[in-house]
Every structure is written in structure tokens, then in C-alpha cells.
Image 1 (spheres, rainbow, N blue to C red):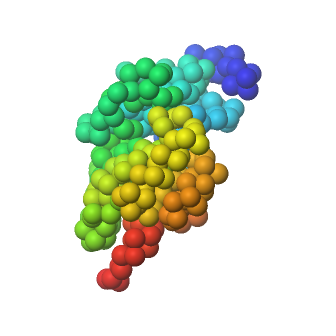
Image 2 (cartoon, rainbow, N blue to C red):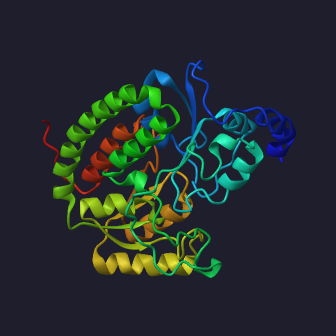
Length: 312
């Protein structure tokens, strides 16, 4: 494996990595698992941080393919940001083990499980591999797609940066406050659209858009995956299509990483609109930042359901 090729060299490097940050270092190296966390870290950290995202925006977050450059970045990192709730459990532990960076080990200030303090939507019945490949016994980990998620992520990132660089607390606080002001305005836009979307129904490929649908009052009638992480079978698709016809469901939501062939078949058989949405920042050309992604998600849902958006 490519990661193992760099491990020995990085072990030697990490042995000399200080646990207390050097104030003479210009910028803090922040490594995030997903672009959403990276985007908000840049907003809060400003010129005092250098940020790298491991995922690029169109992957299945449960099975991201990592690169040697990720390991190099982790060996230098002072802050590591993960979504948590078992989102990255299949690839983060081995990556951190290979990086051998004591500053971002579990339990150190530099290791940040951003889900701490978040109240997740529970996912019942996923306690063994028979219940699906993607197990999340502590709750749905896709809170980056909740309109309230940006505020939570910004708060946790602020805490993390202040913890490793307390001398710059005032700087981070000011940038965080400015970002929250932008969130206030954005959330007002989204709320206006959400109120008009309430009462609609969808089918999704995976349960990655559950937080967004719940915020919009949209009912998720079924998923194309028979179980989380399990590809759909022809029999299951037929069952979902039958349900869609019975309940007059006219929209199927899928993400870039999903099995588009199976989703297209379900849309064709049911006569529904197939709506591909970004599951994280970078998932579409419109999703250049977390706020831009949320704008795009709301606008796309409004268009799919024929909701008119009044320009403010």
C-alpha cells in the first residue's frame, strides 16, 4: 500500500514533532476529512491556518481513497478535524496510525471529533454487519447537510483553534463572529424555502440527505439501498417503485458517489425526476463553499418541487 511506503520516514520525522506549538511557525496546519470542515476552518482560521481536505467532494465518505500526500500533511498537522459518528471509521484510524503524529492523537487537543455536542438523528437497527455495510450506531453522521450544521461546525472549529493557539483567540473569535453573521443571513434565506417545501415526499439512494429533508419537512419514503451501504437489487428497486407509485413520490435524490445506473433505472420505471445533489462541498461546480452548497441544495429542491423563490 502506498501509505506504508512513507510510514518509516514519517515515524522518524514525528519523533521530533513538539507537542506544544512553536509560536514562530507562521500558520497552523489543519487537516480535515471533508471539504466542508476545511472550508469553515479557512473561514474561522483566516491567514493563521493552512488547510487541507482529504476528501475532495464526490467520494463515498465511508470509503475514501487516501493518497501519500495526505499522510505527509497529517505528519505536519497541529489540528485534525473529523466528522465522527463513524463516518470515517473505515479509513481514518489506519491513516492516523501511519502518520505517527502525537499532536493529533485521540485525546490530544489537536484531535477534534466535530460531532461532539451534536444531537444526531438516530439510525435504529444497525448493530451488526447483517444490518448493512455502513454502521452508525450513534446516529446519522451526515450532519454537514443540515442547515444548522454550519453553525455547529464553526463553533467546534473555533474551540479547536483556540485550544492549540490561545494567543490568537481574539483573531479567531472575530472571524467566527463574522462567519456567524453570514450564517444568520443564509439561514433566513433557507428557512423561507424550507417552509414552502414542507409536505413533499422523496426517495433517496442513501440516508445522506436525511438532515436536509427533515429541515425542509420532506418525508423520506424509502431508500434505494435495501440496507445502508448495500447496493440495490432488482427486487428491491421494484418494491421501491411500487411504493413510489402508491404514494405519488415524484423525486429521487442521489449523490455523486451513488450508483447512478440503479438510480436512473428507478427514476425511469417510476417516472420520477432524478435529482443529483452534492453530499459535501465540491460535489458540484456550484458547491464552492459550505454556504454556497446549502444555497444550491435549497434552490435545487425548490426547482424539483416547483417551488417559486422570491428574490430578496
